[in-house]
Length: 212
Image 1 (cartoon, rainbow, N blue to C red):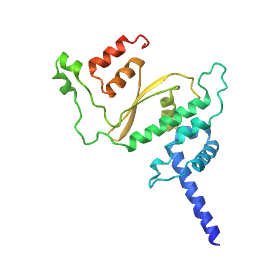
Image 2 (image 1 turned 45 degrees about the vertical axis):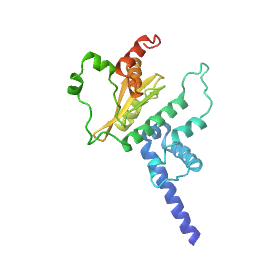
Image 3 (image 1 turned 60 degrees about the vertical axis):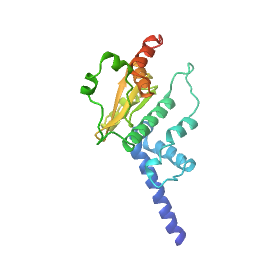
Image 4 (image 1 turned 90 degrees about the vertical axis):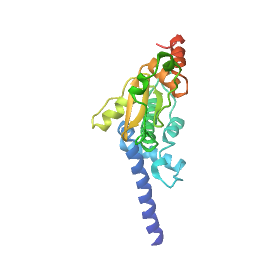
């Protein structure tokens, strides 16, 4: 019947949406198991149906959905738990997608080491650096980047212990790259990305006693 034919189309469309989310969040699929992931993804699609001409935006709100629907933290000391790890992991994988699909520096002229060597010490301190459009700076409660990389390399990583992780994520030659940073490095780079001069960024971090 016509209704049965429409049902086949509807089921195929839903399966395609789930396939897109599975492809975007492979580490999260591994952490949850495919059955549990499909259940969460199905609930997410009901709450956030696709309204875009491109499926690239389909999983945009998934990390926020997981954060809003997560169970209460069961750790007595309030330390990050399994649900926090899943939210962080989803956020990282979504960020990878956005950096990959967004604007980058491919085909553009960028600052080179020789350009910096021409500056005097005084000029260097007053220099403002313009970050690449694909640069993202993000901190997490777990080393989710190592976990995601291990899954993509077909390894079987265990659930990691909580550890504050600060990442610089960017793209070069259409390959997404991430770098774990020390707290002081991360704060300097964040200040530079926010438009501060090199001298002001260094001064701010050096005078902040809370920075290790």
